[in-house]
Amino acid sequence: MRQGRLFVISGPSGAGKGTICDVLKKDPSFGLSVSMTTRAPREGEVEGVNYYFVSRREFKKMIAEDGFLEYAGIYRNFYGTPKKPVMEMLAGGKDVILEIEMQGAVNVKRSFPEAVLIFVLPPSLAVLRGRLAGRGTETEEQIALRTKTSLEEIGRLPEYDYFVFNDDLDDAVETVYAIVRGEGEANRVEGRADAIIQRFKEENDAFISGGR
Ligand code: ADP
Ligand code: 5GP
Image (cartoon, rainbow, N blue to C red; front, side, top):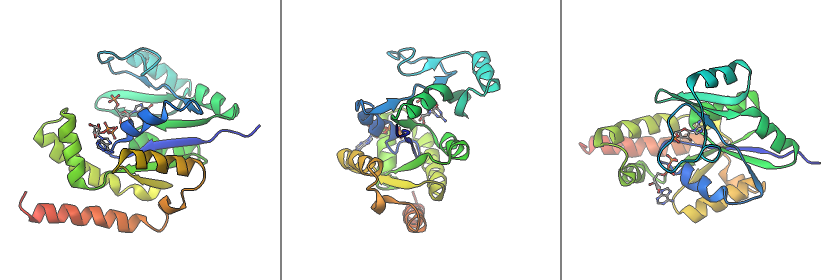
């Protein structure tokens, strides 16, 4: 039987990785990984569906037992991908999609070089700011900081295999499917990263020199 493949979807906060993955998660041909976290459940979140909610002690035990494919500390909480279920799904021939933040994505590639890393990009920094504002979870100041962080994160594009511009959601999802089918040549990072990074830098410089 053919081994399944591991796809990692990551990118700056607000680029739309969660939105894209919400669509992909409805496709039964993909295996789903449920992450473990030390953060408290939000209203409506279900144990074993959204996350496994554990104490810091349980999380540390899992680290000591080498139970994670990757893990990362974000905003004083820990998040990790349990290794065993992912390995079992891959061995069973299922393709698996992980939606994780950027530290974790790069760590997956280190321990699992066959993983395919996909970077979700916003159409522009202006759109990213607008989406973060629209989500309504951050203050003006936090949005300005997030934009700056996003620019730094976009600088890590060369560590990824493919990029997906999330302008129209359906197009972005279709591009991910093309990559999964092995038809993602037009979205390979190799040879294109510098131009993409430069474009975002220029937009940011123009924004700053515009006095805002
Ligand atoms: P991330 O998971 O990368 O932090 P989200 O998926 O939460 O980002 O998306 C950030 C915001 O942008 C959300 O309010 C979401 O509804 C919106 N959004 C995501 N993708 C699109 C899109 N293609 N067009 C318009 N709005 C989008
Ligand atoms: P939230 O607290 O909003 O559910 O998630 C915060 C961030 O953690 C998101 O960027 C999400 O992609 C990321 N995340 C969720 N699960 C994991 C995981 O298992 N590993 C890593 N590295 N990041 C995760």
